Length: 526
Image (cartoon, rainbow, N blue to C red; front, top):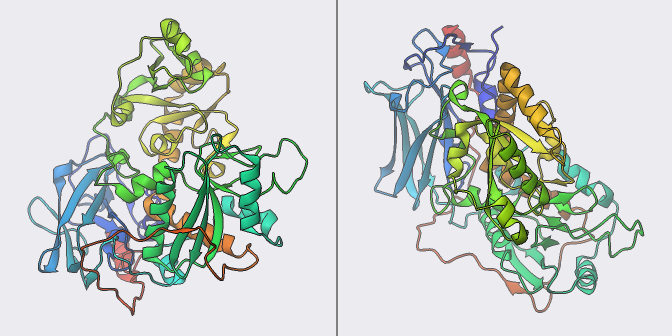
């Protein structure tokens, strides 16, 4: 049995156990046997702001290419079957023989033809893919049932972090209004900001507390997107708009005030907050190929060297949000051959600018991956760059932390990343180990990137929000029968798009799982 190195829900279904891995150090030419898979091949089923699928380059002998055959090896073409709808498409080279094909539509497309062919015009296996249904834009308000949405997005039954966060709420009667009032009485409006959200009949309402509630826009746009896609259950919850968790375990008092459940973007081992994907990764999932350039797909295709050609040193840039970051600059100055670290802005420790400055040059995030090793240090809370560092092709060294994002508990130190003590006292030792154990370091880096590329893509992020809200709704004593007074409706943005909703939506899984035809074809190749 051959071992397949491509992973992921769609990739595992199609490729694993069927295709040989090519060997050798030189890139080979892609052939018509190359394969494509992923949700973007079924555009009518899963409506996302940016649709995407993946391509595995396969040579004429039926072997997976594990080095890039060159971005020009494939030509991606996506066009409407009738009329015009405005499509922006691009092909991203992951430098390992696989590619990301993605596209954003700017109106409803009346049918879609997706083709991938070689330079000589020959199509790859099963190209073209034709969808005759209307392909709606993600700004169209066309919600389907919760089960249809979860099936189309290949959502799992649950996420371990959700189960952990909600385990104490299963048999608890919750009054969200009372919880909101308790939090408001505990916090000064200048020290915390949070919103009470109500979803009722696929409409969104909220009431906020605090002087700085601008970050409500991130939660607004996330919930509005989900409500355009699916009929979320009527429910209510509190969202923390700050980085720091709001509920604490420290006092041990067990008071109702301190155990009020709150949704937060960042968790802490000393808090009760219910963690959801950060506003950063969610924003990039919503606005990729638009106003956001750094996202979980674009970071997989940086114009930087492959592993063996990277600079053998650790790289970091960032602001002075924590004392350990200043310590990192000191280590960099003591070991410039091992660490390239600099502070780009002084805000928290302005008195240290003379000793730890001047501010270093800003470096485009995509160019971080010129270096073989990446450093992830906490800022005010968890560093929200961690998913992007993992998804690249470098090895991540992560500082021990009490803070966590929604996916941290899935990761294993020494398996997906290299752990570093909080005071960085073992960083030099860990970096020297990586230099002398290059193959082991490369394998750990690959596991980390595989995890991020298979579990932190946009459909994964939206699945997490969907399941969190669905499971949370079961913990509330009853859905709101009326919208409370002094709540503001957060309306869907006005649109000039053509939005013909498909009332008889049925999830088309042709691009989401391996068909017998593809399996038979792969078996023939080996």
